[in-house]
Image (tube, rainbow, N blue to C red; front, side, top):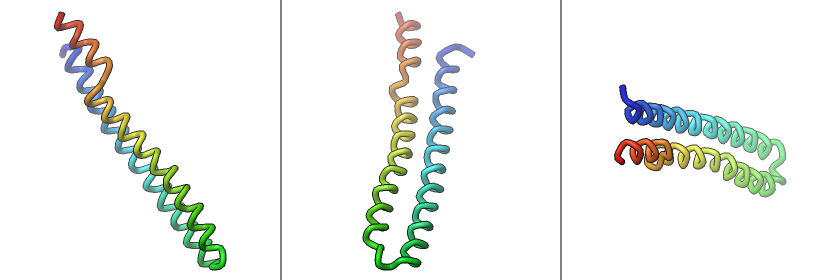
Length: 92
């Protein structure tokens, strides 16, 4: 197995693991945040606006983690610096 194939294989595997963990973690975090917010709204309906606003800010921050993981996996697949270096070295 040559170096180019090995780098391609590791890049695809790492991108898959990154997107798998990067989507599962935020999904569980968002579910937990929504459950806790709904429980809090049920206990204190007068504070629903404040709890909802805080929930949306928290959900946006949690979702940014998934977006970062997506970006990293896309970089690994389409703009991997190791791949570019090896192909440039092998090509000339």
